[in-house]
Image 1 (cartoon, one colour):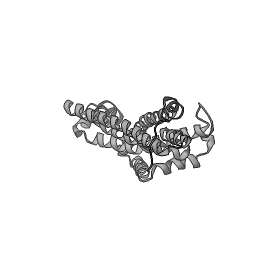
Image 2 (cartoon, rainbow, N blue to C red):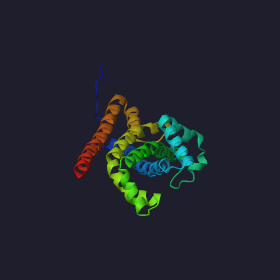
Image 3 (tube, helix red, strand yellow):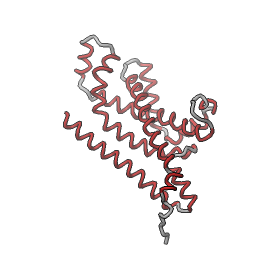
Image 4 (tube, rainbow, N blue to C red):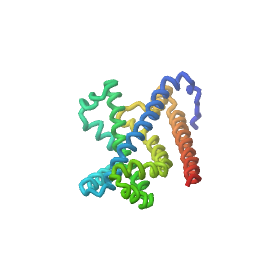
Length: 230
């Protein structure tokens, strides 16, 4: 029978193995969420523009990335994109830096497909009269979206955005495939160093659960507030 031993789990070891990985996982989640929402909003607007080439292109984009596993897209970007491309980004160099930049770009491009569907659904959930009112005032398509449609739709989409962010945070564990140092990688190295892989993976599960549970409670409270406002 295996005896669990967590005596190695000290603040010194947490600082050495886990803090930098946790920082990268959270930073990647925040940056990819912001970038994914921005790119996803553009894609959603293209799908709703009514211009056939743009509609076909944006629809193709969404369908492709929603049909391919994230880890495969990570490997595509990491193995197929020349390393000289990553040298264009200031701030560092080397394999680890390349993996981090690759992870950020991949997550933004990949998650944009999912965020675009959230944005599109949020826009289409609004009454048609909202758009007609903007057109009656002489607003262009862009002005109508910017000043009337999107501000209302974003409020309705916030809980879904957060739910997708939880999924995104959990998916950051896949960056191990390209050698990025995330929180799971930190736990893995700690487990190998002290010969306690079972304990470290259990602790990793606790950390992922705690953060995801906190965010899910935030989503629940946000849903309640939005329901009250309505």
